[in-house]
Structures are given as structure tokens and as C-alpha cells.
Image (cartoon, rainbow, N blue to C red):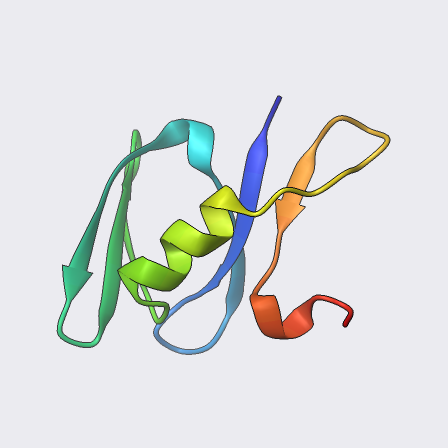
Length: 75
């Protein structure tokens, strides 16, 4: 089952990352480097928020998970 999180590139573009293909996530001074099997991407989110998003449970009838920033979750 795919495990997606939504992150933002350095220019603010939204992207979905499948955590199943992430090799490493490394902190940078101005964000985080997400390394996948196919290359690396710098994102704005810090490593702690990415870790929180990766642990957030989401129920979905399709069997896929889309994890979003905490500020986007309904209260």
C-alpha cells in the first residue's frame, strides 16, 4: 500500500512523496533533502514535521494513505 505525504518544494510547489521509495531524509539549513531511489529533492518542511506526517494515521476506503500537513486537517 502506498504511503504518501504532501511536501512543498523550495519555490512553494506542492508535491506528493511516496514514503515507500524514500531512501533517506536529511536536514538542511533551509529545509530538508528527501532522497528517493531516483534522485533528491529539497523541500521546505523540516525533518521533525516530515516525521510527524509519516506517522499520522489516515483511514481511506481505497487502501491508500495521503498524509497532509497538520494545519490542513479538520479540527
